[in-house]
Length: 259
Ligand SMILES: [Zn+2]
Image 1 (tube, rainbow, N blue to C red):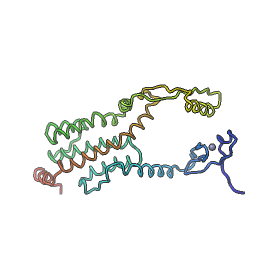
Image 2: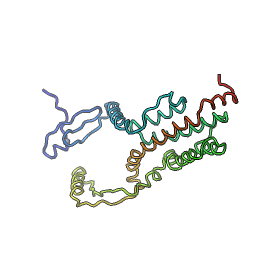
Image 3: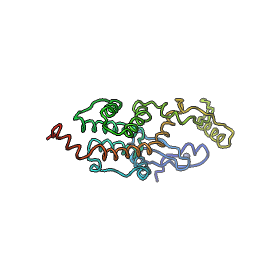
Image 4: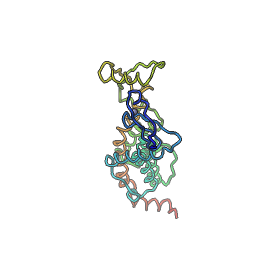
């Protein structure tokens, strides 16, 4: 006899017969899209599918890939790659945090090149050193400072309320749920009331813990391309302005060659 698998209970309740389809570690109903995770199966195939889908969407929207010889600096190249690849697979928060790490390392490389000093301070201290020693143009210092205040600090310190603040309010539909009755049925009824306009939305500040995490994900997705392209352009112009061949030669003369 043919193995037909599991019947979808949601469809069954509506008097329909629909068999769930297995996909990686999930069972999905092709009719109503209800899905379940099967914890005994590996999620790797599902992850890979998500990464691939995301990367194919994002790849043409961000600046073209760089190669090691474009930057001629393995430390900066590997950090650029960390931020780029996490963006491609949809890990936007990680990608943005890594942009801050990349800019901090860029300042440290500049300090090393000009002063022969392995600088160990954090982003703010690097910036002060760069400014005091006049190691970059005022315009670039201003870019690095704005990036620190508006992006690097809130992301580095997980200050989510600060990050989403400018989104203002979130539309929420308060569907009343009585836990002693079928939740699925009440949700379905609630969704109908939303569609017909019977249930009105309430405006909730995005900083409220109930909506903040969802709002943050949405915000990161919207902003990440712009952030990444700005950092990418800064990186390429810094490579030309602040990491010149003659500066390396001068460094070696002053501080000696490593080998
Ligand atoms: Zn179904």
